[in-house]
Length: 134
Image (cartoon, rainbow, N blue to C red; front, side, top):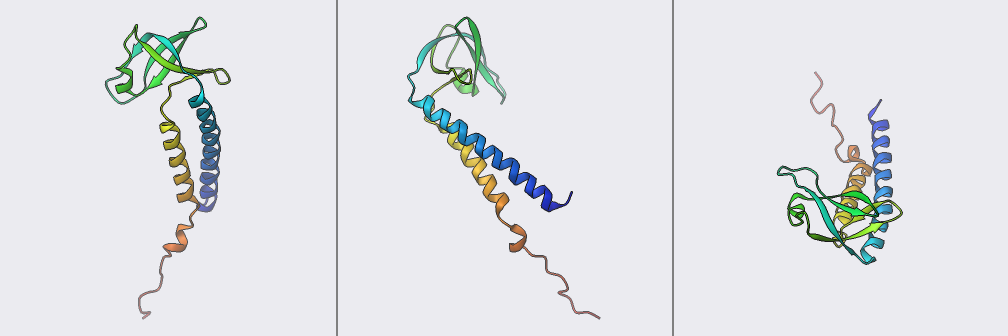
C-alpha cells in the first residue's frame, strides 16, 4: 500500500469518527437538558491506577455499570446516591458534566482530521540535487 492510499484510509476513518462523535454529541446535548434522577450506588470499583473505574446502580431490576474517572468514583461509596440520566434509546446512564467530555472528544477528532487533510508534502518538499554535479 502506498502512502496516498494509507492517507485516504486514515482520513476516511477519522471522518467516520467525526460523524460518530457529532451524533453522540447531539445525544449528550439532549441528555444535558433532561432531568437527572437520584440512584443508589450498589457497587464501587475504583482503580488506583489509570483505567476505567465504575460504580454500579440498579434500574428496573438490572445492574448497570457507570464508568467514570477514579477521582470521581471515590466520591460515591456503596450506599450513597448519584444523580444520573438514563438514555432509553441506547441503554446507558449519563452523568451530567456540562458536555466537557463530548467537547474534548469532538475537538480531538476535528483536530486530527484537520491535520490529516493538510497536504504536508507540499510544505516540506524534499530538495534534490542541491550539490554541484561533478
